[in-house]
Length: 249
Length: 312
Image (cartoon, rainbow over all chains, first blue to last red; front, side, top):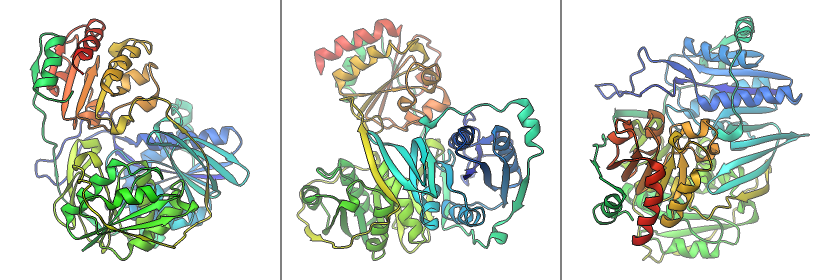
């Protein structure tokens, strides 16, 4: 069974996010970039499926600038077999990303597509669901467990207040939540080997997808800064302030 | 303009979040209809009809919607919603599941997790886990929007809208419900709790989180943790508050033994009141805390429990 994993290049999660002074966006110049954490979980899940003998081939795809090939190489070092880079310097929003991925899915015909539930930059949580809709597949979002059985996949989902399990016909789309697995680190020999794995490049035009954005960002601001408050002397004073000043208990 | 609000519920009662979504719809302005899709949802429809400002409640009552499977719900929402200018739902795990799918079926973008309405086509939403706030304008003919319920005050339940049954049944045949496991805890869900008390690496081990649970039980609070506490293996990952965990915005957030890494601050800095208890007075958490207590948590937390019992 072929598994397709989509990964996104985003700001490293440890980097402090700074809004540009002209409020046009977030400053990404000279900032460390990395694979989106939820996408790392998606790659790890695919690799585990391969180790269990469920997956036979893992294809990793990323949409973005030339530099997104770094994240594809990372996925290849973690165990993916080959990469597809959809190269564009334009901003690609969720619906257009889903259309590009749909086009890749039509060519590759994977049985399972695994994506992160959201990227930590735009925080949209949309692409997997949109891809599933456009491709006519079922979706197991926010997955904490993925079990492939015959022509179905059982996905346990993290939902408000508990867990819910659904059975989806294959092919299907799965989006990962934090508890699905703990991603491994790539070993040095595997990083070296990854450099020799195949990586094809295509473009939105080649795939016949119009990526014009539907949403325009008018401005990006820093959130209202919190002021440091007061230090209290002891627990009794704290409880008194919470009750009588802040009135939150 | 006409707005369709998709009700969030559990087939027996309407979730409070729906009333906040109706409030967001009122901020956009226009006729507001509510769609209740589920199984045996008579009581939910009645409750939705009471939401102030609602014109009409549409009810799709069928087993196909009983477990809120996104494949079925999205087809229903796309079909009913195409007659509206806006489709809104709460940004909970149900709305996040079916709404983008409905948007894709309508070939429109979705604006996720809005915290403010600027106009009928312009909305404010947090990005980078709340480290930046974006104002976005939609050029689509139908605006599909998920709403962060904590950002809008719920409307009153003083209305009396008409209730109308829909006979549309959409079963995509792609997915089936297998089972569910409700969290056993009597404590509220972390993401929607009014009070959250979280522990960090300073808790030293998982057993010590019992101290926080006891305080939580006095306050009716949820218990969370920093990524450091999760990575150290003290508590499971689903308790993590932070950029890669849960984003919370309770009325009161109590951070115990948490230094205040960027990762963590991103997940809780929208809380109304923040309390920090830490023995290191230089800890960055104090820079965002409304009330800081420099103390050994192993003394302060049991005292806190005792003091709270006197007043709550």
